[in-house]
Length: 117
Image (tube, rainbow, N blue to C red; front, side):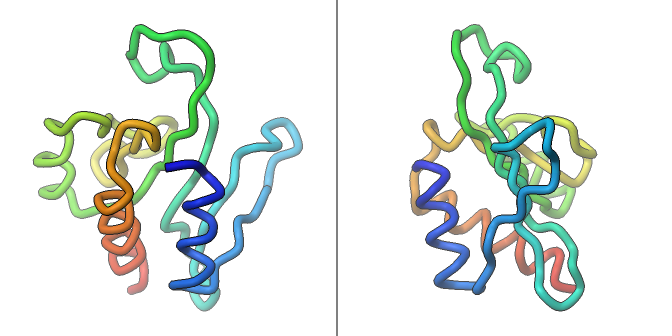
């Protein structure tokens, strides 16, 4: 899945537009609830070595918030890693190019519900 496909999905389902908050990181985008302003996703481009992966270049990942017990289970799956630059108890990073679209949609939905409170 490409970052633009993530943005299309959250726009259609949750009427969320990505917000670009940092001039220093122009491709980092936040996805948040319109009512409570809580983040449910962060789409960023990182070097794979920053994720502990032995690859070159950069790739898009999405950090999402989940319940700790969900995170424990997910981190054994390919393409799911401890969150980059977020609390690793509550957040995971999804390698967008390594996880199926269906699974990414499910994880976005779970993060949206988790942060809706």
